[in-house]
Length: 415
Image (tube, rainbow, N blue to C red; front, side, top):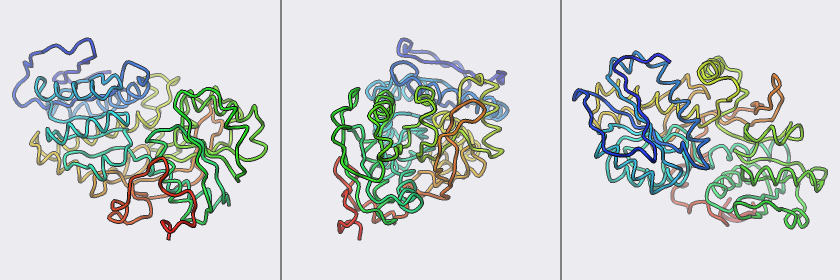
């Protein structure tokens, strides 16, 4: 990688957070990029970092002209550590704008810190909807998504295109799956679905025999989770022969590329929904993917956290350019006016709350050039974080939770 001479890139990890002196000129602009690069969630932070590095290479001339310095900070996937790093960015390192965090809990912690500091912040991948809804802040925008956003379209697709009326939903018992299922229910019931029966399990579950042995009848099963829990569920679903009784659908992260080799050929045909797909065939996406491979090696597939990091950094640099420097008010105004017609994932613009309005893809697992990847088979355009609902009405309702919205589509809530 060749960077402009005035671009200084450093990495601040959990073990290297001592005070450092800045010797740059007063007009240096600084971007702090934060995500987990150590710990159990380091995959997400590594993907974000690789996406940012690609954007840095492509924007090298702009970075030199604007005199931008970039520093990477390790959140360790921990909310308290995230806030410590953010405080250091502002008080010690004179950072002008933050890109990240990546995870749900660290995103919420970053939001609360940003409210108090006023720091212009571009959340990259963190998906809690209240970051750009009920708890939103003027200085915080998002490059990614909310958990419910892709699932509005998936619920509609499952009801209208697949004709399923009764869904059994098994999922990890925490906030992100609640939000995913909430979006699914709202889209599913509006499109003619009848019911969704919930079954939650603790994270870290490896034995699903008691759940699988007592499953109620349904037209399909939606597994709402990912990681090692999702892999164990997938394998046992087929071991129990449940696939012969009803098809298996996935939440947005269930058929993740990193898990597909372990799932094997049984995953082919698996359906899910996301604002991103590794099998996109657009010129913009393929140019991004090929450049990513040229930089990082073609054994590493760029996934949504990489693209969202890439886009978030682009948003940050474009805002500095539009603001003609680091004035906070001008930076925030420029960020909130973001439009990216040529983003790798597809075109998007920010709504008035700071979240992308973007394409949602119904993805099918297919084998392409010897790899199992998610290929879009249907596109829902211009989907907002509120789905098909009026923003004010949506915000007046209660947030998605373990038992909300109702699983019975005849409930008055859906009238």
